[in-house]
Image 1 (cartoon, helix red, strand yellow):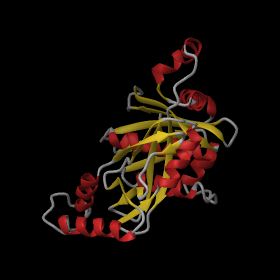
Image 2 (cartoon, helix red, strand yellow; image 1 turned 45 degrees about the vertical axis):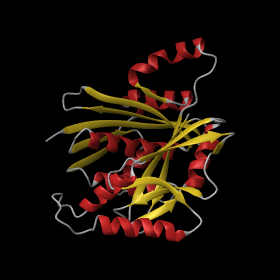
Image 3 (tube, rainbow, N blue to C red; image 1 turned 30 degrees about the horizontal axis):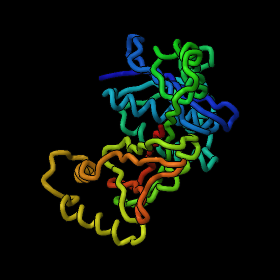
Length: 287
């Protein structure tokens, strides 16, 4: 049984304002295995706290942990996750659903509220990430001040997390406008936008947005090629979803010119759900 402790924090300079998250994952002996500070664009403190929680769970899953203890200095998040408070904010509700979905993938999850003085490292990561607008490992933080002095301006590389709620098992959702909003928020004029789906039963693609029959044809073709029921070794009932997602792909790169996504007249970016309905995450990196 692999057990981990996850320390998380979210910070917003203005609430809402430039926001960052901080995460430290430690093993049973207290050794820090992973530390991340990540800028998430404009957000509230509560949104940043939930984003840190979700990101921490995703990282722990990727690292193979089955039992986790999450420490947060957000009393609101801890009480909402533990069922003591209801989630009323429409902006937080999709994140709450996503968090519960991720928690269900572990054998055990315990969420503790800790005082801020016991969460200093995660707090520092989140605060630094909110300020420097980039993604940092813990060992990078000591060089932030020096880098600011030596470089005329930091490179803008913003990671924004979009929450996507699907309503059926297989569904294509046009997320072009949300991605464009992330590009606008980043302030980038020219560069590249990377859209990534951190799930194994969902994908991303670019295709026609004028005729809805195009996406229906893609779904129907995938159903014929990879039927839901078949001679699969994976026995969780969604083996076909994994195959379909792999065929579709998990990321797309789109050029940015004059602050706008460079897409054809009939092109759109589609989130591809193959195991819904669920609340999903889409990562958008602009730089």
